[in-house]
Length: 205
Image (tube, rainbow, N blue to C red; front, top):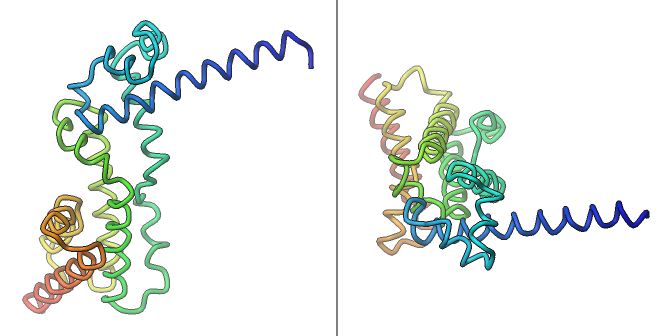
């Protein structure tokens, strides 16, 4: 390999590593303190780089939030609305469909636990977080509609809203905060969703 090309690749690797280090430090601080409470100076100190280096890689807050968001999405792998039909393929009963719905969401919340505090703290001030929350709620609704698809015509619109709330992060986390273990959270949410759906279907029919 020619020396010049080797030197170029070595420099690019160093740039990429510095950028990754800054993003990791930023995510740690955002998760601990919130986005708006984290300064570029805080990030530089955590990443062990000069503040000017942070600005060189990420000139504005939007730049660094977008970089963190991309890494976060890759790490937490949120359920996507388009994947809903595949999740419920082959499920024969309402109970099985509800179980798959609840487990999919609860598993996602488990691997994205550290993200939610920052999301809810700053979503009214940071546009990217509002978009994330909107996309998450749209995904929940798509999954709920797919899960209830066999009886959707017999349910009123409020059923969808209530079930979406039951399987959203705040409800799941509230049960965990009260001492329920992960499997117990799943069991209780399944019971609540089934009870809600069956009660509302009986009112309509």
